[in-house]
Image (cartoon, rainbow, N blue to C red; front, side):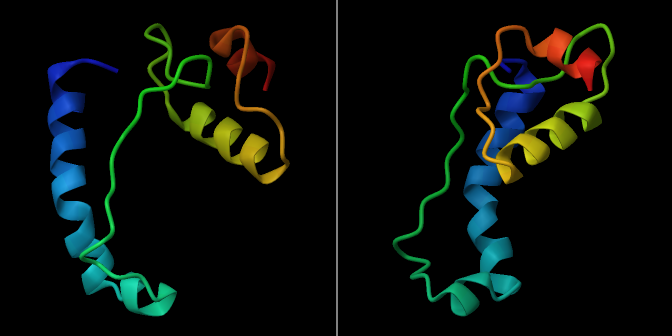
Length: 86
């Protein structure tokens, strides 16, 4: 997604996620050095994503989690048709 709001949100999350992880104790619980931890976004092709017509990303989140949890490839020939199939 390359709309201005999404780009700004990515930048903000990349900048602030370490604060959240530190304050919630994730670094300590997982024994991660916060000084060495880096978080960034990558835009992927062929994975479930929100379609402009339907505007509901919830189904894509559910699809992503289902496929991830069950070892199913995240690559799709037609993400919109895949969403309709679920």
